[in-house]
Image (cartoon, rainbow, N blue to C red; front, side, top):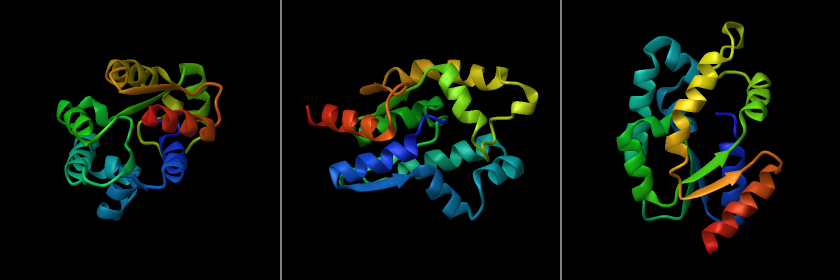
Length: 158
């Protein structure tokens, strides 16, 4: 979360002249409520079930860039589906930069700066091994979103 998946995804889709789909936006539309509301009302497990269901409905036959939620990789089934869909990209960001971005964001149910950053950093560390298995890894620390998208496009073409 906070690495720029949606922003970079839109830019990448433009560069590749293809469709962009944000899974979180699909879930929000389907549920007719925000992710924060889903978490508050039904909990994280329910949201993760929504992610898996949505992921299972994606079309592998069309050229599409998908942005997923940061926690999607936690489930083995989701990792398998993503691999089946195509190439998986990890936007790697160092913790200090990520923390700064998250401090400026709103409406993230797993980020509660009032209770400290330990839980968020723990999530970051727990998910890291899954992220590192991506087909393409781009370090985003000093790159603009368009530079990240260009780098991914170049990798995809090679």
